[in-house]
Amino acid sequence: MDSRRNEDAGGIMNDKKSDNQEGGASSKVKGTGSISSKDMIFRADKIDLKNLDVQLEKHLSRVWSRNIENHKPKEEWEIELAKLDIKYEIARGTYGTVYRGNYDDQDVAVKLLDWGEDGYATAAETAALRASFRQEVAVWHKLDHPNVTKFVGASMGTSNLKVPNNDPSVESTSFPSRACCVVVEHLAGGTLKQYLIRNSRRKLAFRVVIQLALDLSRGLSYLHSQKIVHRDVKSENMLLDGRRTLKIADFGVARVEAQNPSDMTGETGTLGYMAPEVLEGKPYNRRCDVYSFGICLWEIYCCDMPYPNLSFADVTSAVVRQNLRPEIPRCCPSSLANIMRKCWDANAEKRPEMAEVVKMLEAIDTTKGGGMIPEDQAASGCFCLGPVRGP
Image (cartoon, rainbow, N blue to C red; front, side):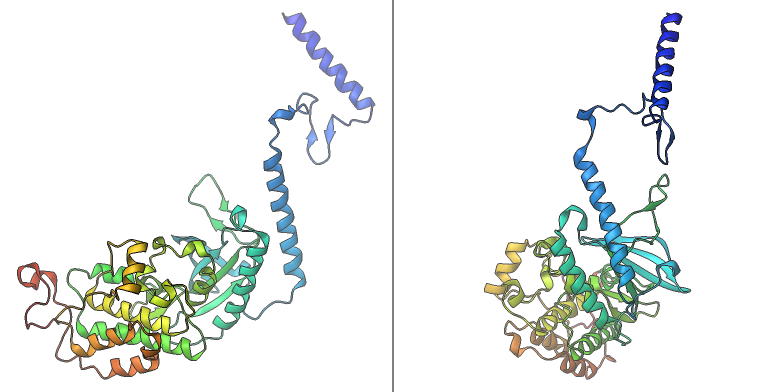
């Protein structure tokens, strides 16, 4: 047995020597060091050609992306990725992931957008989304309003970005080379939706309702004055700072994302806020934001979600054909209830401009209370059936 093993070994050594004499083609591969002939034997049926094609395409894509980035002049809104320090993941969505980070000693939120680039979108679709993204970022970075999330910067590539991975065995997460990166101010108060959920039992004082409504209406009025239609006004897209100031978020990115028809489903959470003309696929303008604001106003007052138990088909049919709207509680002051009804009018032309809504809200007297009655104070578990007014 030992002599046979020695003979085999000798045969291999002789083969190696012969190979070396013929130029060392199989003994060395450039950049890899010495490799035995045994290591150089591959079974053709074990080679994953499809995976090799994918890897080659990704490599070429990275090279192509770097060449494009190096030859294009830098935009004034483009950030230096070397200064961006990403800490940890905050949330994950359809088109990307949001991280907490730091940029130039400023707390920021970083949203990495890939739009399903690897295998989910064609090159033409990705290029179109990137072009739209570039145009909207160019608008976003010029906006300046206390009720609009402050834009810090963006990048059209993420090839030099290091992203921490939840798996400790993996050093960092890799993103498609042509993914885009948006950096905005970080707001410690979380989303408006989270705030309303926390107050779903005790409800909000009327003065707080009006304060939040004014913040949102002023922010939307400003966007409309800049010819920007948000198109995705909902409590999830509103953020609060440490002093409970509301700021509109994702107004630019939301418009880009909405171009994907597959996103227009009940899973996005936007269905209950969509105007009838949007649900029907008809042309729409900034008045669709006014409709969504009306739903948000009801949500802020009630600390509840609109149509929580209805499906996509049920909401579409009921809102469009049966004029379904959330039920306004009896304890809601008529001044506020009237604003809700005007904003969610089925006829878009009858809805007020957001600048008018701001004036109507500013005229409301909050000194006498009028907030939603908390659950533990409601008679027999039924809300707002009596003359009692909330805080």
